[in-house]
Image (cartoon, rainbow, N blue to C red; front, side, top):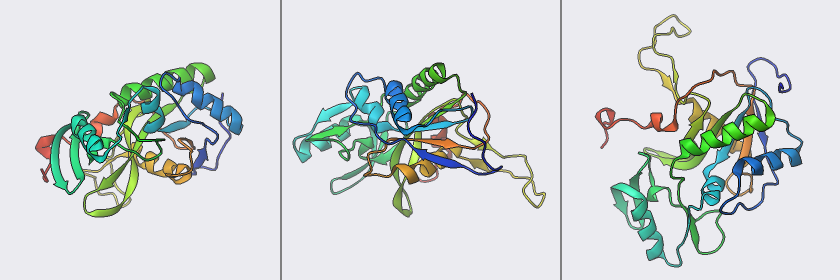
Length: 240
């Protein structure tokens, strides 16, 4: 099965609309397949399926009642492996996965009622399960990227990043290769799955109810890396 041909070097970002509310116990891969069918999108070799973690977390039961601000803060603190900074009600924390983010990734946006969603226990494993099921159902060679929205030190605004990966290496290592002028690159490692997450968010958005998008046209190789590989080791961290 092959995707529609695209001009060399071009990408298509295909939003998967029509995916309704996901509840605990739902099969996320089946939900995605239903959404693709409703949009008339057929997965093909080389497609990258980008999924916001919210629907995965909901399917995996990572939802909790937070009727008060105090309950929300307690939940965020329980999800934190370490707290780096506090300012008022905002907490910058390290999650058990090693991610540094606001309130340990506990989020109340796009959640009905007085509830909050936590990050999946193992986003890489979740991505892997989804990829295997989608590949079995379609026969296509795929990659899956699970995303969340993070702030960034020293820069205003939010962007989506990868917190789970399957089928593609998260880092494109260009060290030892020449640049356009023939100079050998010494330190350049591109967080390609973060770039994919941010690109896909352009068609998913924060308030459109579109939790899945397909990135089509990227040339990539099969890899066994994990989003956890993107976490900078403490010995390399100059700011903590």
